[in-house]
Image 1: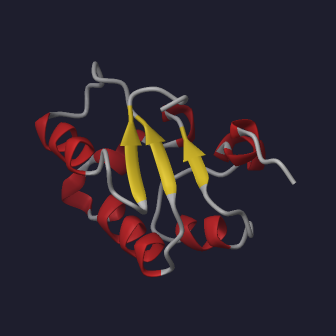
Image 2: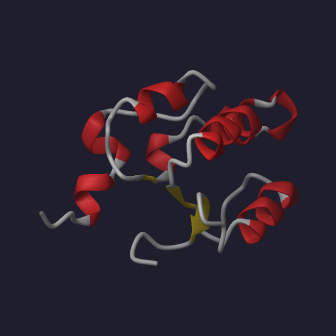
Amino acid sequence: MDISINDLLASKYNIKLSKPEDAITILETGLAGMIFTLDDIDEKFFDLKNGVLGETFQKLVNYRFPIAVVLHADHNFGLRVTELAREHSKHPIIRFCQDIDE
């Protein structure tokens, strides 16, 4: 069975990243991975002080569930998020990319 990019888009399953419990919802899809665009992510998710991003990502890493986060270079989430995206540009589980086709 061929899987297209559209089959992995979080929006197709009405899944959003906004709280750590969303990791369980993602895992329950049974998919091989998932792609998130900014439309699928609550802007508070990128507030690194609240710990939501870290806790959610840790759950996904623990279960080895790969996700891609499409985050354009001109985002307004600050330097720390830019550094996080750069560090995860080649990560095997949590990958940030600037374009959905990457």
